[in-house]
Length: 298
Image (cartoon, rainbow, N blue to C red; front, side, top):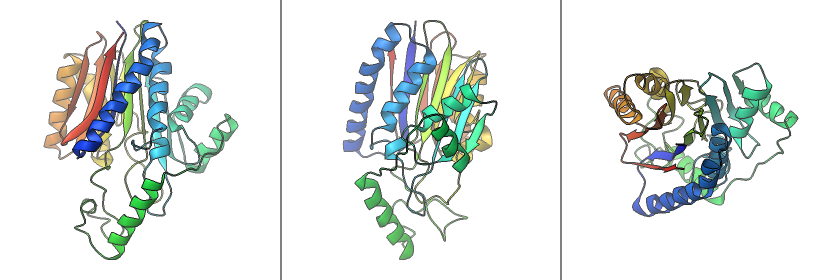
């Protein structure tokens, strides 16, 4: 039976925002349910779902991406199929749907990952129009964080996480893990995973997180698929999604994802994780206060 699970990021989310986000997640699942029931391909479904989240300023992806230290978004995204096909973009800008560009990398090139201007140039060749709109709420938050940094208010709520880069920036707590992602098993028993993010507030120009890295933010194999959200540097060190999917060889998605997050907790990796195994079982787990997620069976 086709099944889809999605996430909108993990972290500390206040009650009002959490409720709004949960409603958006449910609306997205309602919108995509006919695709599950009519036999659409898993890759088409996860791309469509992530596009919807990239269009919503509530989520830290696409249009709603957070801003780097210089005040503009640099986005990461990736997709992967259970046959090992993979495509990713890192530090891309000027596009509305980074995950769709990542899919083109997978389908139209011999490469796995394109970065920065090269990714942007490729997107233009593929027909993606220029898109540089930034929500006012993101501009306002960027100014607040930069001001706090300039005033050396390094205990200012969201500015307490970068240690080595403390003189430049600290991590935004409320939105720091706002990555979005989806995993789907379709009627043809194909599995696809997709993840997209704007990264972290006030990151240094050129910083790349876990999202576009195979096995870190996104993974799929014959055992299942997974998408992660959380502290990118820590997720990369343990290749979190690959670990979760590898565990699906011996455990259900629920148990595999749970075990992977338990390992992440021991490694001081704040994260959230979703997954689906070959039998259509779903899994979700997180060690942060909250995570937006939802799932739907056909």
